[in-house]
Image (cartoon, rainbow, N blue to C red; front, side):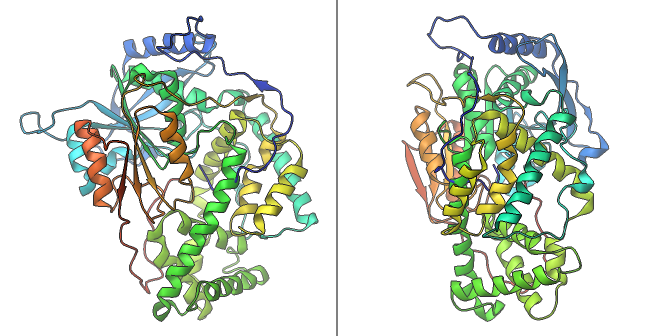
Length: 533
């Protein structure tokens, strides 16, 4: 889930497509919906076919140790014999030798990194990291590109060359003229999505959960072991609601709030508010290291330095490519991951000293990534717009975001513009799934959350914990990195390993001290880590 927003607005009047799916194993006695019956048909077909593993396509950029294949799923689960789409799947087999393993082989661990719109095909590579080696010894590490992503029935809503034009403005308090321009762009983008994608309405979280069930069957797994991060926690929770008896173990890392009244308009407003808190954390850290960066001895002084750079870029973009919009995008990443803090602070400091190169290197768009970024944005928009009702009048968006921007200016309007096509979406909307399981219906699951996570605010983890009976929550206190499994916190990793390798959970809620803050560095051109949304 991308920088999204609070839960203050009133949804506009929308025609909804009712959720018609009876959870597997439910005692309702009602006949299964066409979509549920279609999922059963597709899963049986996939189980019989399996996956033919071979060399990965060059486009995946994966080493020979990782093998790839495809799984066919129906575009429309109500018509399982109709149009099929192929999902790209990657796998690295468990590395441990059966005779030497203390925990034994435990099947496939399927991973989704979130988005919507992110691909997990790189996931098998994490097995080489020290924090993942014990898990990689026990599990086949399986990643995949969800429907719409990359070569899995790729979605596109506009020419990638027109997507993310730079330099751009990003006013924190936009005037009426700028708002009219962005409304027009949102309407055009929504039309482009519909015109370029005839099956647009089938790209939903419900279908992502159904696809996961088909993938489970294709892998030959009787029950699914799954790890979802960010948005991956949401459709993973939808899967747990629909197919609780098919779950073996599930890890929800940095959980989206699944409350149907918050999906997705409210979630996005709350996210903007949380990013303001995390932006304050970053400025506090920079002020603490003023001897290194000379950006100000207080968070307020650091803010003034940032605003000075922002104003100069509005007047003269750095390298002709980095305007206020690109600056904001680069520093938004620092809200997701604190390991970006030193390089971002260094780039800001260098710019104010007359050297714009580090900022250009870190913030300028990469032309080679344009197609990937456009595709990711298209999938994000399609899924979130299809999933739930959104206000259909701009007056509601204007009221809610103007109010929020008074206290949380850093991300609020940029977030609103990203989601505004949903106000003018041409496809029918669904009613969000009421994620919940009854006692004993679902095996115990693990929720991991950082207390100051901005992308998925902590309340989401608490809400998911309440809704999934028997789940346990591990909190990294006073920390805000988005996605904490297999990271630098040994306490978190101990809980993570104990659950995946032995099925052990804390009683209900465990706490871990925060990982260490990053050390200051004057190296403004440090290599950046590849990140998913």
